[in-house]
Length: 308
Image (cartoon, rainbow, N blue to C red; front, side, top):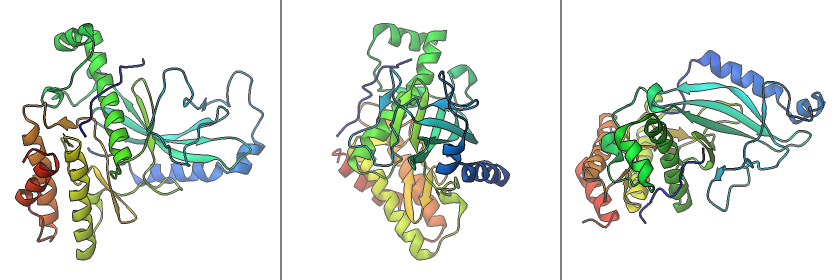
């Protein structure tokens, strides 16, 4: 099933990079956010929650929601409050924050990763033309503005990355692929499933931790499976590496897919697909996985895409 970008705009390396002291600060604050703490907090003002927080944006006008059926852990109540727990990572095109969404006086609470995209004027990653080939903007004005890189066009392209990641994550998650669930999109703010522990400790990147031979073999096969899910959807990740693959309790999770490439409509689509396979195979081979071979994997991916 090919994935198309259906949403118009309503208004390195992975998610988790900062020093340990920040992790400790987030965990300390999170421990204080128990259900009893929330129940004992001052009564909410009529015009909003306590200072420094916000009402949940899940039910705001213009908010796009992830695919159905949504997971049970999604907190969608109108009385939910978003608690900012700190910056997790600053990246080339976006910053990621840890958020707790909870309903006071209940045990309904969940951690979320919030990715806030910058416009093109404030992004370090600007080599986007190769990735955007084959994507279609619906309105003539949008296409013209994007081509001319006007102020509106730059803002549009900045937002297009958020829309693209939301659409790709939704379609892949619905197909069973190992990606975070996309909870919602508001403008250029993408709210996703938190991949990590309940105390706010993020799952490590594949590149960050040492594994046994058996563990690496399992992770390599999971990586092939993840790439195969993309290929069936006529997609290549576009920037796959050991830095945007997380390992959560032995389960491999693929992240950072805003630049996902349509391998059918993009003239360089197969090139991106091969680059993903080569990068992944090279990393696993260098860590002792003898079966990691880009050429054989590429054959499987092309067949999965129905292009062989």
